Length: 124
Image (cartoon, rainbow, N blue to C red):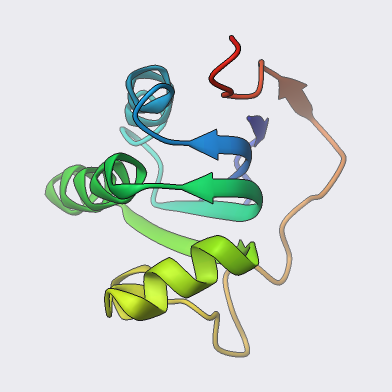
């Protein structure tokens, strides 16, 4: 997971690896900590190679927690697997996916002021 510093109220998180039963608890802890005080949490899921029902449930929990805190979660980009899952389950719209133009994702920093934490994989 790569987390960019908040810019204009938007914090981007780049997700990579697998978001599944074996990785979801760690992801939950890390992502829930980002919600308080963040007006918009932008998830870049282009690097997720796999997302199962546990990962989808986490995205829904994040959405609910964010809404309760006055935060908005958007999916700025998605891998083919995540794109398919969001569309199949009819959940794309609650994450403003795909982003409409203009989008809060348009001006996100890509390489500045970031720190790296380990990728969630079942081997970790």
